[in-house]
Amino acid sequence: MSDPKSVDLLARAERVIPGGVNSPVRAFRSVGGSPVFISRAEGPYLYGADGAQYTDYVGSWGPMILGHAHPAVVEAIVTAARNGTSYGAPTELEVIFAEKVSALYPSIEMMRAVSSGTEACMAAIRAARGFTGRDAIVKFEGCYHGHADFLLVKAGSGALTFGVPDSAGVPAATAKGTLTLPYNDSGALRELFRSRGSEIAGVIVEPVVGNMGVVPPAPGFLEAILEMCKAHGAVSIFDEVMTGSRLSLGGMQERVGLRPDMTCLGKVIGGGMPLAVYGGKRAIMQKVAPLGPVYQAGTLSGNPVAVSAALALLGLLDARVYEKLESLGARLEKGLVDAAKRNGAEVCVQRVGSMITLFFTRGPVGNFEDAVKSDTARFGAWHGAMLRRGQYWPPSQYEAAFISAAHDDALIDATVAAADEAFAAKQ
Ligand SMILES: *Cc1c(COP(=O)(O)O)cnc(C)c1O
Image (cartoon, rainbow, N blue to C red; front, top):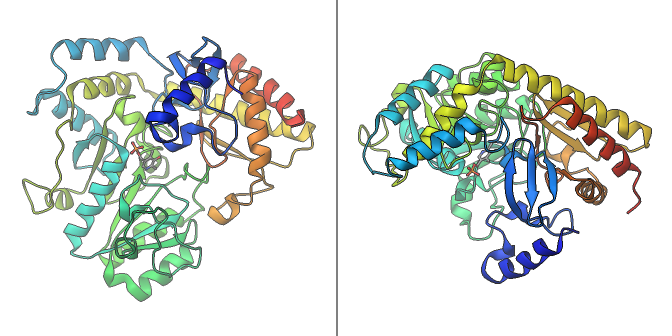
């Protein structure tokens, strides 16, 4: 249970906002209990409505790679705001930002700034469809690419079936253009391209999945996507909204040395502001208006305050940051594994860099079907026990937890000690 002030706020919020929250997972429905309303944040800490301190492993779901309210980022925001918060006209800041993104991600020859990861993925797919003149899109079960109609589809794991919408309000006809396959199944991908390759506009993938919990790609899986797309004239799209500049400065594509045709970025790249990016091959991006027939626009796109925050954050990210994140991540992983073992808890800890998930299943988790074997009731109990011990872990079994460079060894050890107790706690 959270503090009385948060409970009161939730009651008020529920009257005017669906579920009391502006994004569903914040409601704690899948772990039970009620959400802590946040009053402020600094470094690795969140502070609840009553002032209680929590060590944060959500980091605004990814952006806060250097922790909250980093002084340099705050300063950039304040300075930019003094010059006006939006002009609806181009700025030098946007040029500097696009040059920076292109330098960090050599696969991105041209890009557009948008305001959310959802928009980035929606626009990247529209560009892929406009470029190829084809309609079908391939996605993988358990991958999340924002809430655009045609992406809210995970369908059954039976590979080649037609898409079925995951959400009410998505027309069946829209979902039909989305073909879903199990993650990490290169064989099914090759088979689909063999039978329907000429219909496929593009393949969109999280190069490390964060949105069913952390699931790394099997060896050869990402390569197979690039190879099939190339062979059949389809567009490969890495959705690095979560992994971009989180797993390394140049994203997962830098770690594995691959160059997808298109890339979507958000979260870290936006410096904690509503800012995201889609971009890629020049020939594809030249199809976007006003150069080409693919329409896409935004009143607040490339907003000067958001871009200033992003530039300040990106300017602080270097190899040392990623080395520290790797070392903290490894420490937390080992700590959780050992603590689970001591308590006889059957779990599987999966981690890439500073993204980590504690699955309450034996594992390993390689796809959605494996992930949903997790004991979500046990996860919920563990989550509640952690929260009571001042540990703010993502309130869902199927999300990645994030470590920031503002965390340190002592904080990680305290979290592991709390986890040890939480595994033992009877619920
Ligand atoms: C968060 C996320 C999105 C959606 O981004 P929003 O900014 O929440 O719209 C898309 N793709 C991936 C991989 C994400 O993690």
